Each structure stands twice: as C-alpha cells, then as structure tokens.
Image (cartoon, rainbow, N blue to C red; front, side, top):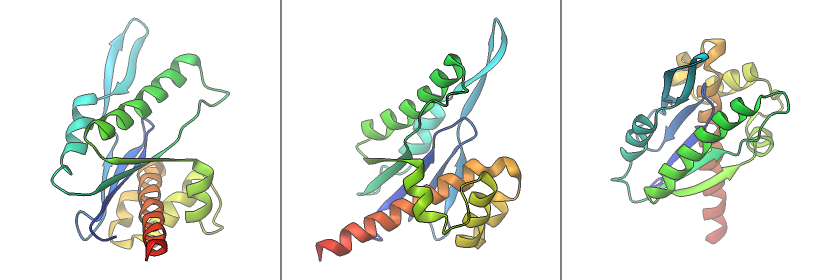
Length: 171
C-alpha cells in the first residue's frame, strides 16, 4: 500500500491535516482558520480556500485516501459552537470528495483504541504516542496545544494500517 497517500484529519479549529506516504517524513499542517469580525467580537471559521489548496496538492497522486475523525456535538457545546465545528468537518469532507479522494469517517473510539496502545485517551497521551511513533517530527507535538496535530497524525497512521490490513486480506 505504499502507493497510497494517506491523509488524516482532526477537523476541529485546533485540529490539523497529517500526510503519510507523500514524503519520507510525515507532513502536518494546522487547520486553516480565519478570525472574522462579528457583532459579538471575533469568531473563528474554516478558511475554505486554504483548506482546498492544502488538499489539492495531492491531486497528482493516483491514490489518495482521507481518514477524517467523525465528530459529534458535545453536550456542553453551545449551538453556535456545534454548528461551527460541524462546518469545518463538512468543509474538509466536501473538498476531499470533490477532489475524488477516497474518504473514510472514523469514530474517535475506534482510532484511539487502535493507536493509543493502552496509553489513555487524553490529549497529552496522543502527543506522547505520536512522538513515539514518529520521532523525526516529535517537535511538532511539544506544546500542549499541539494535540490536534498529534491526533491528525495518529488518524493518518490508523488509516495507513487499516489499508494495509485490508490489502493483505485481498492476497
């Protein structure tokens, strides 16, 4: 399955896009977000043109597979926050599908269960696990606020392993 470029997406505003199979080391991009002035101050929303450009750079590859965390509204979130979060998820998903990429939505419990190796499900555990699996880019997960980067990379690795397993079952 080395001919597949695997993208992992943590779709939140502090999320990220991680890429495996494009270069020797993983690539990780913070989620493109705009700060927009509103009557209530500023609000964040997805930067759709930058999201699109990020995903378009992989069009030259014959096989691109996107694994995106299937998000749900949190009970403590406001309706506005839940809508904004869903907007980002839908934007990533829509752009990927429009580009013709294979898309798999993955539940947080599924990828965390497969990738965390008993380390727990906290954000700091994701940063530690990503640094362990990908020491060449461990500096990307050094800060507590880098958990979205770590989770995106773990989602991508989950995707890569899933594709490998599915492919080995075909042989």
